[in-house]
Image (cartoon, rainbow, N blue to C red):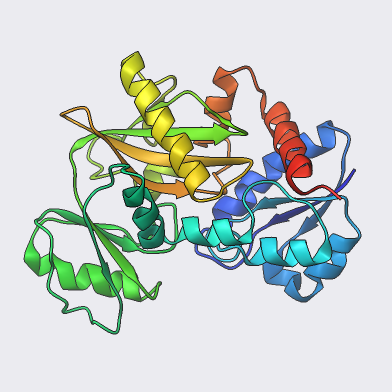
Length: 304
């Protein structure tokens, strides 16, 4: 097939996108596809025209555009199939506050949260007990996130978010073990336990992408009961948001055994250190086989 590989873009996660695209391109070519690289930051106005000439689009964008559904909506207009969630589901999942509302309606535990906009201002009173995480309501890779331990740190953490996003999500810090769970097709993959490197306050950008970053253990050394519970909740949340193809959710396993769902990523990272390929490897899928399966699922969902 003729596949356009869409990566780069203009978000703060551009370099992560480009890094993953290199490995994806190699896999696509190994699978026998003809690949055209397309960077929306360089040639946005020709996206629909380029997509009409392709058999499939593989999206490896992070942040906006990509995870906000814009590229997916344009590919729909071009009649070009692609992997992963559609436009509306992508937008809903990217908005952390909106997706948390959905989780709560299903009875899926998520940390108590507060939504704040620049209209309310950086001097908005904190309505949650400390410590809290303050992060962009839309965005990923832990960019712009702060762990606030004192009331005096709160206004500057909000200002940091407002410099890069129009809304902030404040979330109670729940101590525990960080787990991630991916869904591929209609099945959850093995869990991964994440332990930030010594001295890191949380699983930040450096922990996620540096070669000497966090320790990631797959399958996670937790009980079968915990594994099943997290997988069930992840699949329920995936379906409730209307996601298709694949996604990856981040959880905190509290000391009392409750798994709290933090957020869901509709375009999981595909760099050499990314979590989804590692989980897929545990069920026998090489990186190229994972790419092939994502294409198959995308064609099944919206093939011409």
